[in-house]
Each structure stands twice: as structure tokens, then as C-alpha cells.
Image 1 (cartoon, helix red, strand yellow):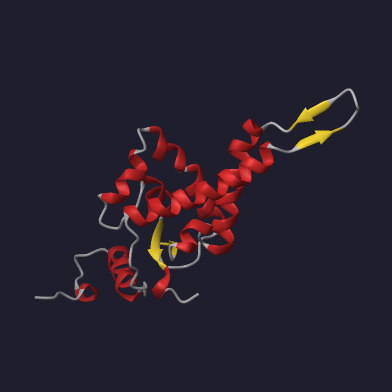
Image 2: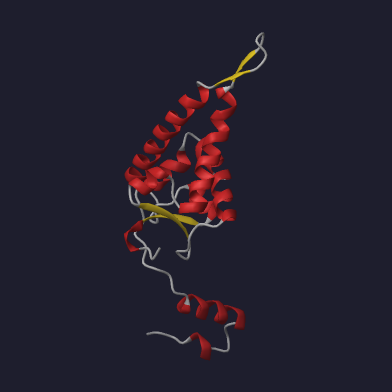
Length: 165
């Protein structure tokens, strides 16, 4: 038996309001991307980053004939992946690896990833990886296929076939 919350005076108005918002909110039907396809996308991204890193690490800056400073690859090990992931997430809602695999990162309502959510998701990679990568492995066991970083940022990795843009 279905009870209409709007005619129940014993339920506070704020609860009634939230319940009506839930029923009227249109969320697209999303197909969540599983662990293995996300792992493949991640491996592709790190292969691309390895190629970029090779060229950045091989660069030499020539200055004074007595001085030759090699660009430190160590500093770039953090800067390049951070820029890579963040900028691709914001611009395309996916990295090249995810694009190749037909995946996109979306917010909980199906919209494209915002700057703030992308930054929060990126920072959330730290707790996902610190505990034996458990935050990433979690994707394989979660019913919405979310890792800890997705849960913290309120994002989903979905198959792009049913997205509007």
C-alpha cells in the first residue's frame, strides 16, 4: 500500500519536501563502469604518462658553457600526472584512457564534472591509495562501482554510450 506523504500531518514539512524532491528529480539511467575496464583505462593513462615522462626527463636545458642543468624528472613525476588527470577530467570528463575505453566521469545527477568536483576527486586519490590501494579496489565490490575517491567527490564513472554530450 502506497502512502502519500503530502497528506500526513504527523510527518514534518521538511521531510515531506525532501521526499517530493526525490520523486521529481530526473536522473539519467547510468551504466556504471566496473573495476576491470577502469583498470584498463588507468593502465592506458599511465602508459601515456610514461611516454610524456620519458621526453620530459630526457630534456636538457643548456645555459652557460660551464653549466648544464638536466630537468629533474622527480619533480615532474607529481606535476605532470596531477595536471594530466585534472585538466582532462575538467575538459572532457575523462582521461584519454577512459575515452579510449568509452567511459566518462559524471556528477551524481549525470552532469559533466565541475572544477570543484574534479579537484576534490583528485585530492581524494590520496586516501584511496594510502591503505594498500583499497580505495581503488573498492570499485569491484561497490554496487555503484564507486571507489573511495568517487564516494568522497560524489562522482560516478559510467559507460559513455547513454550520455547526452
